[in-house]
Image (cartoon, rainbow, N blue to C red):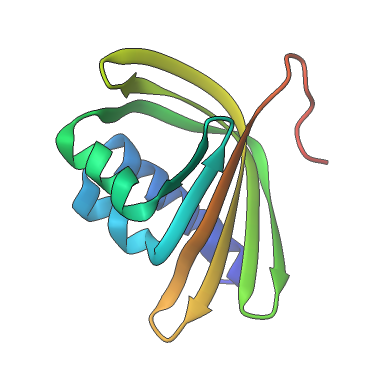
Length: 129
């Protein structure tokens, strides 16, 4: 399997773990200092996994739209895709159409995500060319 395919499959497996709402399955995809940045600010790994473990954050669906872009910079890979997802946060339903960028770094154990960034997609916005 080539590096691009490996990153795409890793991202899909991570999405499956998120939809399974299993913090123990989600954690191994993330570096210890992972953080997600979005319109509401930053959330650290422990806080994100705590929300999932408590049931305060659940996902019912996560779907990648179109082809993902994967770029490599030495032992770093940047994965960018449009993702539609929905679920609940603290009892409130959410539905999101977002551009997601994940920065993966390869270490002695494989690829780990060190940073995720989500940006809401604009209505009618085209996929990555």
